[in-house]
Image (cartoon, rainbow, N blue to C red):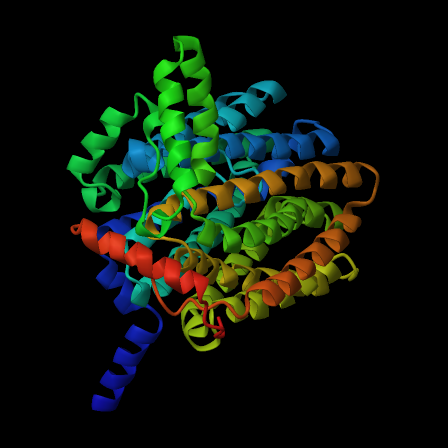
Length: 507
């Protein structure tokens, strides 16, 4: 009996359940919210391209629709990145949930291409099944804020795992609902009905955001009041000088010159200066030490995201339906299994990261998935094609939690929202181009070429990731005691020293 108990305790700790319990209610609400959101995204991604095709829109227009929708997500994601910590993370998540509800209601009621496109751009709709909207960067930053380095990888793994489970259930239910409804109604009516599910999921996400506590915010009430009073003059809101910056007299003089220029400027000049400052504010919050790492990572992630955008799950459903004439319920079964495989595999991301290192886990799990994408159009049988799809989806998400943990480890706590927000924005911007390219190729009977190009790009990302980052040391976590300003300053000094003298250890 004691052996069984010990085994249960080992599993409880090894697969991150203990870490999830320790993370607290706010982390649970974030995981619940993403699970519901990905349930809705999975349900809609199964039928999104088929829905537009049923409305007699060409493949090129379908690809353009998806690209434009993702471009709207870029703008929304950038706005969220700029305001999330100041405006309030809970408010941002609540606002995004309301936009989900708005978009779902429009898709329930309308069929006009431009009306649907406007709702998709202004609101929150996942045309591809991916989470490219305003939520993810805020949620990952909040989870990093709520957790210590010892449990962060496990919590982020469950964050990804739960989303895969949500997508699996969403695609399965979507296929079954479509099959049941289209027997008594038109196929477009069945597609419209699915967006009621989207509306309901948005309502649950809104409720979860409303239940989150102040622990999820990065600032205390006193800090929030101070930052609010300073927000009226963004130009004066220059970052505080850290001890490592004391010797940089030129930087200090530049800051004083900026303040003096702002004080002497006319109202019109002040407005222009504020706009310029806001544009530079985002990157200005990323220290040079962090920037040296994350810029290279951003370039690689841009390549990977372009590939993912070209062969998104929504477009893959459309490709399978066209090539093999598969029904929605059959596609739902296939994609549900794919997401279940992804959910199961991501459970092992945390244990693998602890044993292999973050970068090794990212590369060794993502590379086989990339090869599966490259080979995907070759088989002429359904089962061989589906087998490659299972390999792709089963391994594809295992790099997500280690990637988020890697970013959290190489940047300072105050930079995490900015860096993760920029990361999300750049990835979405790159992925935006993908559907249009694939739509153009599909219109020219070259749908299969998209998978070859995407596979090669993904392999290039994996090789570059291993080559550039495998030796970076992330053994020390940059935690900040939020109740002690002196501790924060000391932590910053230590981080800068470590950045200047990196230890070459395996990641």
